[in-house]
Amino acid sequence: MTRPAGSSPALDRIAADLTLALGQLLRRLRSEAHPGDLNLSQSSALARLEREGPMTTADLARAESMKPQSMKVILASLEEEGCVERQPHPTDGRQILFVLTPKGLEERRRRTEAKRKWLVDALGKLDPEEIDALASAIPLIRQLGDS
Amino acid sequence: MTRPAGSSPALDRIAADLTLALGQLLRRLRSEAHPGDLNLSQSSALARLEREGPMTTADLARAESMKPQSMKVILASLEEEGCVERQPHPTDGRQILFVLTPKGLEERRRRTEAKRKWLVDALGKLDPEEIDALASAIPLIRQLGDS
DNA sequence: TATTGTTATACTCTATAACTATA
DNA sequence: TATAGTTATAGAGTATAACAATA
Image (tube, rainbow over all chains, first blue to last red; front, side):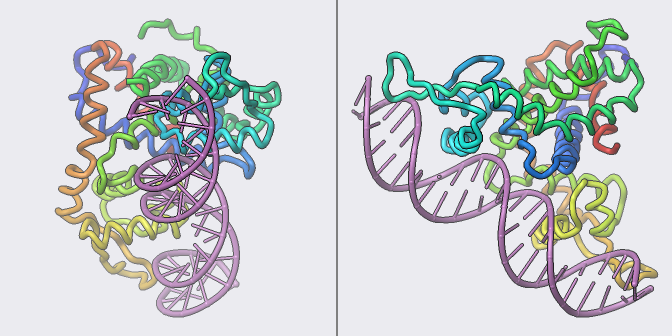
């Protein structure tokens, strides 16, 4: 937006700067959460179940760059609160599909509200072109995470 | 870049998408670290000392959105490895300034290398315009974190 | 008394290792 | 035997609370 294409600093520098900016924003976001709010991993898992439909622990773990044992803990907490439910796998008796419940959909909205509100306020302080530049970068960040 | 200004989706949607994308990239980055590598908080603290010069625990904690007690743990680990050193405050006997050492500079480079390399590779898969769009967004992400 | 830093303790998130059950 | 899931345990990272020292 503000800089012509081709004049990008070296990838090295971008990588370092992105890492630092990312870490800081995440710590800041976490510090804005209310007690009882969902953490990033929980809301990310719910969001993925909403986007992609029922998934197994192992598939969710892979998608979220986690070990299955770690994802199990997250799913157990979500299950206990009624945000997800188990569903037997149609053909493979070993596998268990997890499904997002209507309550899960609602809880995700409600218990990420404080972080969302803080971030929306922070975004509101940017210029429209800056917001647009940031919005354009989001799919790219997601693409990096999927690499 | 690819979308004219003014057509941004609601800030709400941007906030939610950004949060998810950041969380995923963070988990992915962490999973690429080698044993013994610095974590995001440690390297971020070192980077800040490099940029801004000697700082106190309390100032660093504020800047990094942490409690002073938490920052103390991070500084203690860095001090033990010789990455930072204490320096008495010239006028206030209560305060202790932390200074980046030459070794700290070198360790930060060396022990963030795996994460950096993975991210540089991932960036390399993007188009030049996409890299440029991402680079433009980094100062904005940093600005959000400072809000 | 207000502020800087420290100590002690606990909680959250994620990992490794060992085990069970189905394929 | 390979794979999905579970259980148990441990580690990293950060928080809260109580304390000490200087201002």
